[in-house]
Image 1 (cartoon, rainbow, N blue to C red):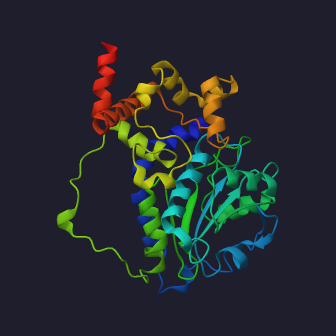
Image 2 (image 1 turned 90 degrees about the vertical axis):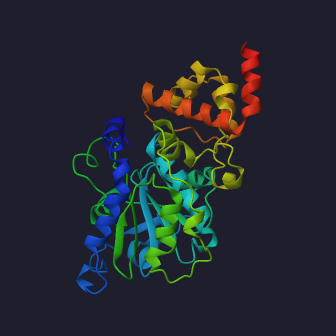
Image 3 (image 1 turned 120 degrees about the vertical axis):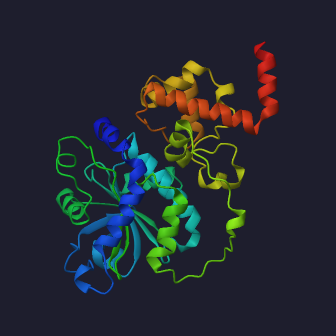
Length: 331
């Protein structure tokens, strides 16, 4: 996705969850078979998995299944890695249900480059588990599939560049319930929809929560919003309990004390350029974390300042002793 598309969509991210829920309710009805997307609607597009296995979109991938489908390309340096990292969190939450009663599919919009071998390497970099297939095929077939799924925007997806809209759709083919979702949605919300609501709540919940134990809701700062929607897909912030969901990048607790502020600001602003310059620290992180490049989030100066302020405040809150020690060193 290019920066123009990103900038335009970024303003709408807070509203995507609400829009997706409304879209689902308006577009589907289990009492009206005509509303259900079936064999007569979906093209039975031939695709190839990252293992080189030929499959058909309807017959082999979505028929009678609950699925999450998005479109990516492996050379993308901004939104696609974040989408993949977020869905990886959802996969971790659903556990062995992925591949059993929930299925994930990422389809390349750049099939000329994204051969099965390239897609396999991409999946391995993100440590993708079973039940999630990465697919390629013929470009015209994939474009038609995007149009049928409602994930193709004229003027954005049909240009000469590889710009594309944020594209994630989840659904249950057998019931005809489908909804578009933000790929930056809270992973617990996405997991709940895929694991419960799209299964019509057939699986009993083992959780017994009491409203009296609910935490106090507070308004997040601008920096926290950026961290939770962008950074938390790959990073933890002293959260060892959920570290396995985000073991793509380093933990950020105390990072504002450990790194030079000017370097940290530029690294967040343009990591692709810093890596291209062979910056020693950037290269060390690149090698340490499975040669997976940090995506360019297209953040402005104010946004970078906000997220760094949040990281510093959280580090001070969670590690007050270290904060005091740092203050003494500064004096």
